[in-house]
Length: 321
Image (tube, rainbow, N blue to C red; front, side):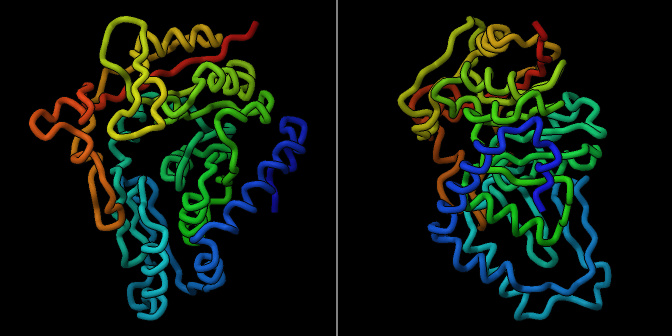
């Protein structure tokens, strides 16, 4: 069932259909599709309870005497491995704990004081990956959360988790930040976490968010920043070996971008250094991580010689002309 149909007056349905069709072609051709499609047909007949309030999102059996058969547990574990790396989490699905690269509860716990009243609100999680933040935000009883994520593997991870979580007011849409105005004055709150520095045109993204927010809508931006007091942005060739970091603004630069985009700054955080407890290699994310991105002799610098990552949160409200 497409629950967005009831909001057709606020959504460019033609553009959304095109994005969905292109995404479907993309994920059907992905390496993960065939195995995941087989897995999606498996029934896990087990009564479970979910816990989205703790740091680790948990799906646990209600009756410990009725556990998964060894065959089905093996199928589940195999599918989790096939969908690695798991970037955000962690999760515990029955007898298996998914150890993600990011212990995302560090970020979520920093965000708590910035989360406005979400009850009966329409919320977006831009670049939401496999949905960890959307799942955690659902406890605040929003009317709807759109986990906007264009990556096929992230989508399969989301679907695997929803197979057990079954949180009905969270939907996945393959909409990128630069296309967000297909939602016209639709959202009450937009979360944009770890996204803006991946944008070739950050002001375009902010303009898209402005158009997607309804009157007096709220945006919560979380990002790596360049630790400097001047309103400037670093434009590195690579940052922590990432080639898709286009601009790293200073806090004052980011606030200026928001002001240019017709937002009013309401609240900001201090800077939070990223630690090895928050980002690290795990059994479910075995590729390079923070330890490989920093200078071996001076971990306060990246491998390129820039300052090690520091993160920042700013909350702003849409101004109405």
